[in-house]
Structures are given as structure tokens and as C-alpha cells.
Amino acid sequence: MLGGRWLWMAVLVLSLLAHGRASIFDEFDSGTEDVVPFHDREDLDQDMKDFLEWLTAKGMNFQSQVDVAITNGTGRGLLARRSFMPGETMLAVPPELLITPDMARRSEVGRAFREHGLDDCSGGEDSTYECMPLLAMHLTVLYYNESHDFHPWMKILPRKLTTPLFWSDKEREELQGSNLYNMLDGWTMNVEKLHRSTARVLGQHNVFPDLPKAIYSLKEFKWAYATIFARAFDVDGKSFGFSGRQRIMAPMADLFNHGDVKTSYTFNAASGHFELFTQQFFSRGEQIFMNYDSKNNAEFLLQYGFVIESNPHDYVGIAASIGNDQPFYRDKSLDCLRVLCATKEEMESGESRKILRGKQISDSNEICVYTTLNIIKNDLPHNVKTALILRRDEKRLLILNLSRYQRLLARLKERTKVHRVSDKSRSKRKDEDDEDDEDDEL
Ligand SMILES: *[C@@H]1O[C@H](CO)[C@@H](O)[C@H](O)[C@H]1NC(C)=O
Ligand SMILES: *[C@@H]1O[C@H](CO)[C@@H](O)[C@H](O)[C@H]1NC(C)=O
Ligand SMILES: *[C@@H]1O[C@H](CO)[C@@H](O)[C@H](O)[C@H]1NC(C)=O
Image (cartoon, rainbow, N blue to C red; front, side, top):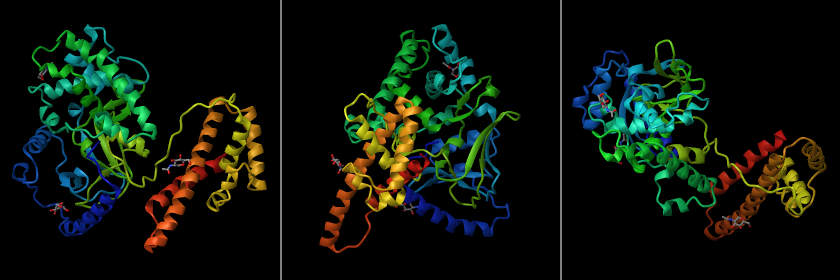
């Protein structure tokens, strides 16, 4: 599902371009236009041509639906070959072209896992997580097994990934101060642990002597793990005999770039096809985006290796522990609640800064504080209280920094006489507004 790194601005520009092109296409939208054969396409490399030939040979009908293109800003992506109405299927991938945990279990890799007492994910609820090592090893073996039927697909999978799992230490240092910084350590250690307990064990027994030794390496395991994480789809596992969700890979379906659009996918149990739908209109010639879900930027980066500027779904997760045995806990919790109870108007008017000096801001705010306090005392679990305090502190930081930035900005404006609103302070303000919305729910 990763089509490459892109920025919001680039997408805006591209969709404008695409719209321009669409109108030209539409004049000829009679459905009689010839499809240029892959081998005559100058914009496709040989691997991509082989891949498309392979899909065609396998009977996958995509040529009247989508077209692979290299788009500026978003890298490789898919364009609409015709216009799509809401509710239409854009792509259907036949069952024999899917990579599923079920298929991994029945493969040589599944057999090797069982032979060496490794978990072949044959049960359990959370099979999306449980099956990752098996799927990763399976993908690696598919990648290196040149005689396997899936080879044309494997050859077009990107080998250089931009997710932070592959970042240098120096690059990772840039994340300092964000939640991802510590999460990444945990994530890396987890992947390494999974590698040690699976691929490395198989390597010690050299279970596939015909394949290069590299298939057991941490490097390949990480590649496979991150590739699955970025490109697989989680679907209902019932059709595969699993109770929970299942992680599957589907060729071509993973070439759509992400956009904030209305699309969905499902595994059609009756036909065995993996299907992608649109709930919105796409015109011919336009790039079709898939919605990879509403995620915050930390999640986008971890999973796909990109972030979206001014991501409307962005939020900051807060995790830490401050116990109610801390000194001044009660005082702090009052401040905390005052901020959390503050209305949008109170936050914007700067009234909220009084709170930092331990002052009340309004009667309605105090009522909210004490009502909430009562609920907190009786009902809220310890960790929830902790989270509230943390949010208070984060908010305080934001307020402090915001006022500092505002002062700086005012001074800069004074100096340069350029009266433009800085995007940075605008998006900071936006974050606060979002938090206020949460507060209103309290
Ligand atoms: C993509 O960018 C290149 C280089 O800037 C430019 O030559 C080309 O025309 C662009 N293509 C499209 C479709 O915008
Ligand atoms: C490689 O692919 C061939 C052809 O599909 C298959 O028979 C063989 O079992 C595969 N090797 C491994 C190690 O999976
Ligand atoms: C934000 O404010 C805190 C507290 O005053 C300060 O320590 C921190 O350096 C500030 N950060 C920025 C980026 O200004």
C-alpha cells in the first residue's frame, strides 16, 4: 500500500493536473480506444512490463480499469482508465494471486516452521500479529525463489524502504522528542527478537539449501516485515479458517497511493477475490488514491515511511506515568482540569494562560472542574487520571511555546514588514483546537 513518499501539496497539484487531463480523455470516452501493449510503453521498465504481462496471463482483468504510471510527487501510482462511480469495483484480484497466511502455512516455509517447532500461526485470535514471522519468511523465500510463479511480482517490490526501521542512528535522533523515538526502539527490538526466534533458527538448520543464505538474515527479515506492514491488507479471516482478521497481500492492489478519499476493500468469500471499491467519483485519467485509513503522522511514518503535511487526522499520543502519590498532585490536577474544561473561546482569548498561574478563568470552568473532579474521584481509573495530568502538561507546553512564537513572530513582522501568517503557528493553533474539542466531551 506504499506507493512512495509524498507531500500534500504535491497531491493537490497532481490532482489538478489529473483533472485537466481527464476532460481530454472524456471526449473519447466511448470505450473503443486501443490499449497500448505493455512492451511498447516507454515509461515502464522491464520488470513492470513483466509484472503486467504476468497479471494478464493469470487472467486478472485490470487493463480496462487502471493503468500504472510514474506520477510526479507520488512516485509509482495507478491512474483510472475509465471513470468510476461510487460503489464500483476498481480492482478484483483472483485468489490464486494472493499471499495469505493460509498459503504460507501450506508452503515449504510452513512445513519448516512446524518441523522446527516454530509458531506457524495455526490458531489464536490476533492472527495479523501472530502470522507476521511466518509471512515474512514466506515473502523472503518467494522473493529469492526464482522458479516460483510469483517471481514477476516479487521483482517489482521496492527494496529500499523509507520507514524508520531502516533509518540510520543519526536520522533517528531527529525524532527525539516525539513519541516515535522510544516506540521505534521497542519496535526494532521486537522485529529483531522475532527474527532470532524464527528465521535465524531456520538458518542454523539451513532448511532451504537451494536458496541463498541471505534469506535467513536480519536484513531480509526486516525488509519482509516492513514490506508486509506497508503493503498488506487486513481482511476478515473467516474464509481462511481464522477467527480474527487476516493479513494478506494482493498484487497491483498495493500500488495505489494514499489519499484522503472514500475507498474500501474486502475479501469476497464467495468468489475468493480480493476487491477494492470506491465510494466516490474518479474521472478517467485521474490518479486513483486509496485511503490507508485515518492515521496520525507517527503511524503513517512507522507503517509506510511518509508523513502528510497538515494531516487532518493528526494527534499526539501521550504516554507516561505520574502517580497520585506525587507531591502537589491535587493542585496539579486542578490546573489540569481547568485547561481541559476550557472552551475554545477561552483558549483562544489567552484567558487560559491564567491557569498557568494557578488562577480560575470562569465560573462555568470551575463548575466543570469540580463536577469532573467528583467523577474522577469516584470513577476514573488511576491511569486515566494520569493521562489527564499529562495532557494538561503538554497543553501547558503548547501554550507557553505558542506565546513565545507569537512574540517572536510579531518581532519578525515588525522587522520585515511582511504580514503573512506563519503556517507553523497556524498548525500549532490547530492542534490546540483539536484538543479543545476533546475537552468539550469531558
Ligand atoms: C514530471 O517532472 C519532470 C521533471 O520536473 C517533468 O519534465 C515532467 O514533465 C513532469 N511530468 C508530469 C506528468 O507532470
Ligand atoms: C520454489 O518454487 C518452486 C516452484 O513453485 C517450488 O516447487 C519450491 O518448493 C519453492 N522452494 C521453496 C523453498 O519454497
Ligand atoms: C517550549 O517550552 C518549554 C517550556 O518553556 C521549553 O523548555 C522548550 O524549549 C520550548 N520549545 C520550543 C521549541 O520552543
